Amino acid sequence: MKEKTRDLVLRAIENEWPLSVSHVAKKLNETNGQKYTIQSVKYHFDSLAEKGDIRLKKIGRNLVAWPAEIEKLRMIHELLR
Image (cartoon, rainbow, N blue to C red):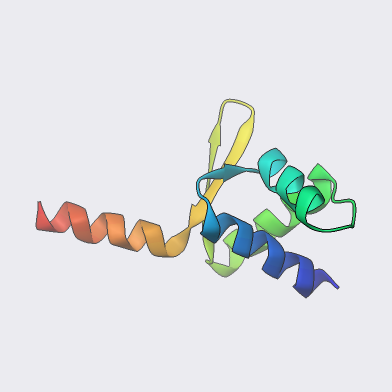
């Protein structure tokens, strides 16, 4: 069950980034019939960041995530400039 939710969170971040925890919870609640809380989505944010699949940044009171692949592309772009 946790792996399925983790995959849904990762897919939501990959499809439309950067996203905050509350935006991901809202998207998952709209697309799936289940109720996702902000705490459960934040748990998956933390576990995905620990695995290295996403990057996190705290902006004000929001925790924002984007795919790790995008960060690699950004670094390549910086090197090419």
